[in-house]
Image 1 (tube, rainbow, N blue to C red):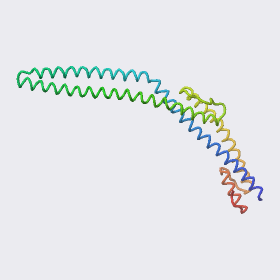
Image 2: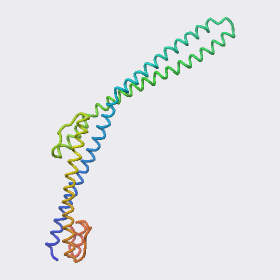
Image 3: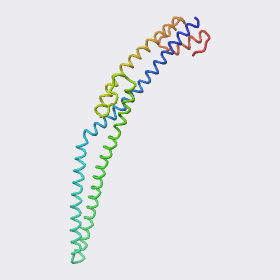
Image 4: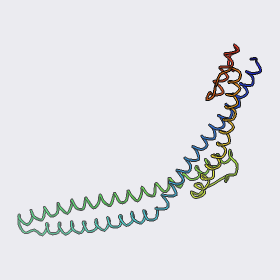
Length: 222
């Protein structure tokens, strides 16, 4: 065994490391694609039901305001009755009616406030998601710049979801090709190491084979 054998093993280990780095980078791109797809799909789902949700919340607000108006009328009537009471008994009964009417009005006012908050929350969410779309487009564009055959600047939710589908298919093919290349390099390294050492090394990584060969000829691994 000589230095040339170690150099060949080192060459294979270098190729393997480069392929592993490329594969790792592509898998990170895949994570980014999935993140963009998930957000775009969530935004599309939100706006798909937006008009129905908006109509429901408007209706709830209108119903709450109508109920408040009725409770205000009831309270006004109760106070009028109290003011018209002719004796202590009538006045005490009227006062209880006023307190009940006040309680009901407080409940109605709280309902109006909740309905208004729900409407405002829906509008805030719509504004936030709308503002998020340009950044999703920029993230998709950065991925597209590193991969072939992808739309350069998807912007709408439908475009982003379609872009993500194509990007995932693209990445799948490239990663499979790189994995196949790594398998060949590792197999070649194992076969060479097994031949040089006279023992099977199948299943070892290229780095492990390199360390075994380096130790055998008394050289430190690269």
